[in-house]
Amino acid sequence: MKKRLIALLLACMPVLASCGNGEKSEKMSFTASNNAGVAYDNASYSEESFAYENDEAEQLSDNSSSDSSSAEKKQNASTDLIQREMLVYSCTMNIDVLEFEKSLEQFRTALDQYQGFVELEKYTDGGNSGKWYYEDDEKWNSYVATVRVPSRVYNDFCDSVAKLGDLRNKNASVENMNSEYYDLSTTLEIYEKKEERYLEMLSDITDDSKAIALEDKLTDIQIEIAKLKTRMKKIESDVAYSYVYVTINEVKEYKPAPKEPVKTDTFGQRLKNTISTTWKSFLIFLEELLFFIIRVLPYVVIIGLIVLVIRMIIKGIKKTAKKKKPSLPVTPTEDSTNADEQKK
Image 1 (cartoon, rainbow, N blue to C red):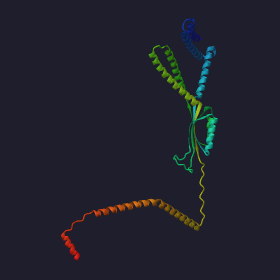
Image 2 (tube, rainbow, N blue to C red; image 1 turned 120 degrees about the vertical axis):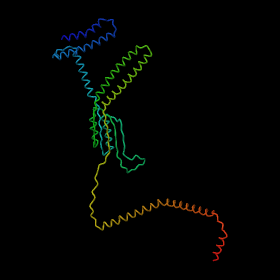
Image 3 (cartoon, rainbow, N blue to C red; image 1 turned 180 degrees about the horizontal axis):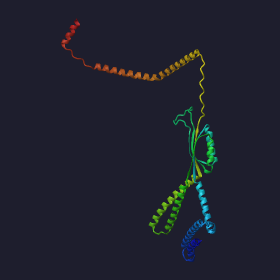
């Protein structure tokens, strides 16, 4: 109890001093009051610790102490409530459906019902990416979307989407953002107090150069404050609205092929079928051969004409070369020899 009285006297001394000196400035009075409050809190803490060690906590009936305890309890309760809600939910779901258009419409209806919105979506029919359209092409529709739904209906929405078709896989996760959020909150508080001090200093500065330098530092602080607030708002938004990644794929029902029937026909029937099939194949061969000749014939004619022209040009060149070739002179001995040969 002596420690308690001493602590209370120490806490009251700055207040009494500030009250006795009424001519002091308002700023000094405010500082003294703050110091008194700090001393009072320290006194309350020390006396509670002393009472707890001596099992005399029930004797502490001071009104100020009870008010401080209730305020701390309320603050702790609110802090615990916020911490419990700083959770970001996300879920990835792949669903196969037989009726794609109907299932997609049901998905959008559920999204509107649970007050969600689409953040990103992509649709494809699985067809050929070329510029030609073929009516008999088999297409497989697919829809991929990133949606946000209020966290309070997160589980209900996921259950509703899972009922659209065959749920092939589902991956759900929860991320606790408490540590990051309260680190940002503490850092923001430090920067805001620093901003207040810089604003007070700036109001008292008359030197322009010092004012400009202080404004630059103040701008940097304000930029950091804006970044912190943006990140905190992002976390609050993620906590309020959960992420759901949905993929809806169109599938066809598998039907096994019918079994091949057992052959019960006779030899004559099989021979007749073979001859008929062979004759049909031969006719198809002749048909394809005729079409092939028709397709190739123009090219054959053109190639033949080109070869003919080339041969005629070569013959003309040879004839011209023979006409231009000079004849050799004949000697007398050769003439007599030729004459004798003619006589004989």
